[in-house]
Image (cartoon, rainbow, N blue to C red; front, side, top):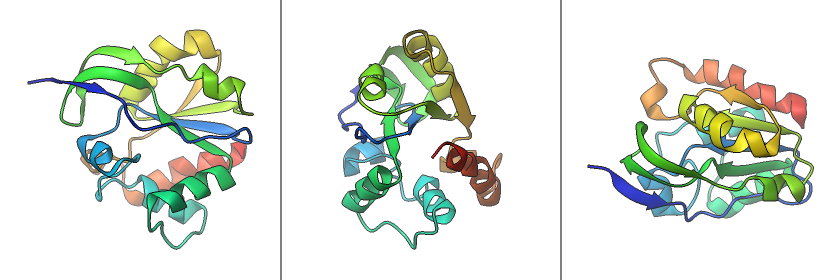
Length: 164
């Protein structure tokens, strides 16, 4: 059974943002906590802590301050879709967010997509308007643990440092 989901979490960015990191769509847990990568088993925030040498993030306000302080914009490719739970492979009827508002109102010159589905959807729905090729990053979801170890993800995500 697919649920019709509409994205309700605001993008995080400001005029100083240099890179944009895009996921696919907030998971049920992320929607519940009202912020990106909200599932306790998702490795996104621990990886950010590691590559930026920060102890840990205690709340969403600290995450927002971190993102803006490091010139990172964060959002998702999709505005709405039909999806089963958090299974990107189940997505039907995707509608893309208008990421150009972020690009026009910031200094974003690099777009990173987290996971294969986010990358594919970005290429199909966003790239024709943005003109910025996306740089693939592996998904930090716990469902991706068999493919990418924590150390592998750290090595992959360190690439964002080259753009900041």
